[in-house]
Length: 341
Ligand code: OKP
Ligand code: ZN
Image (cartoon, rainbow, N blue to C red; front, side, top):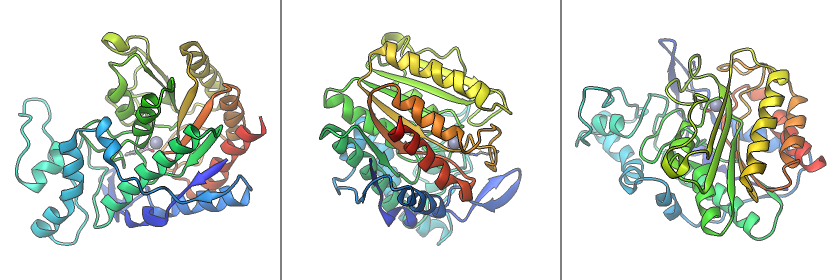
């Protein structure tokens, strides 16, 4: 299959993130995409192509246009107020506070985010834009008849909601791709295998019957994003039944993960999907520095095989994964397992 990649992702590089009370070098770093590119190439998976520069008008199909405008305008406002340091939110309109967008850039950063894991830097918006274009170029390949494509998006997207960034995510690459596929006539299921619950993707489609969201992730009682991802979230209103969460506890290995993946795949088949968008996070790996599942490198071959067993058009969208040395091999294993099955 083809991989879609652009070096523009390098323009987004947060210096630090706050973890356990310490400013720590950011886990979501440019090297992640570079090592995946290297290993996808080494595995001989297929051509690497540049994204089509179609812009991000399609992002407004699932995001609030005011949020998109904020992302575009935040850096100059931050630079004028604070100078050339990473823009980070510190105050949120939490319970008991009013939901009114302030004029202040610090206020806006809180208004349009749900955590402090989403620094904006000088080149971030260009990279965010390029990631959406990488995802949408994958959509174009599927629409043109390819069985599968790998959109090597960075920054990731699955935590981003209609109007909030968070968890290293700004615009929701997978949700935008899914929506464009739906509008092209596809019946779309999303399979989110990132270690963290894809709260943004779930929220975007929660009230809709036409897109199925399935996710296997660390249990929200134990794990980020803490406030969504429980098994009793089935969808709302018309969307009732079109959401499936399969939370697993810390320490889960393939013996627990494989059956959860089977359950997600069975749901996707029962939904009657003809296209699956895979939010491909590799932070389920046993050596991931911020995660607590125990998948091993060969398990990712099995993951790819099981996804191929769906027999659907498949768009892989890159999400998380922070054990940088093994990240490329693990990603290539999913795609190789898929192609070989
Ligand atoms: C983004 B993606 C760890 C703190 C976690 C944010 C994690 C975002 C993950 N104790 N902070 O889903 O890989
Ligand atoms: Zn993750």
